[in-house]
Image 1 (cartoon, rainbow, N blue to C red):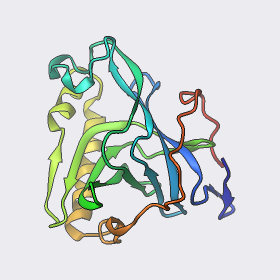
Image 2 (cartoon, rainbow, N blue to C red):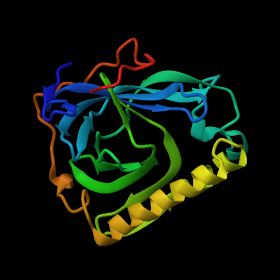
Image 3 (cartoon, helix red, strand yellow):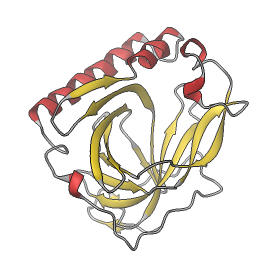
Length: 224
């Protein structure tokens, strides 16, 4: 993994570099989601990465291997969990994140590069480290469509996370504020929605990054 210095304060990854995009569990701090991605762009203003179809990822599951979304909502966040490795299903995903934003924006396509939607994933601003970025998912999300309409996603999971004590009232209020700020950006059709990323395509020479054996290494060395 290489990096190119683009400023005195931050070392940026170069296009084509391979890094890990990870999420840590609220409270535990353990990595429970890990996705190898290829860097598209990395500047002081924006990190853009591509997760190719078929990428082997780490995701949480119940102890018996049952997918999390199949567990009843009442016990979804209290039932014992583990992690498993599995290939990403469907088309690839382009992820865009400005450093200070408490969200990232994902772009989804159907087969044949038919653009489907943007997805605003509310999350902790990402921490950069030598091998990638770490964040914490905040449950609440927003789908945004090409006609500029939008709708909230996973409000039931957001409420359940509060009900079972995973997220306190103060943090939940901050997440709601972040969501409101994201909606303002959507209504104004600001970046990245206005930047034409839906027309982007990956370099055909890129291969699918491999999931390293130490994908959960911690503490991670912080990137300069």
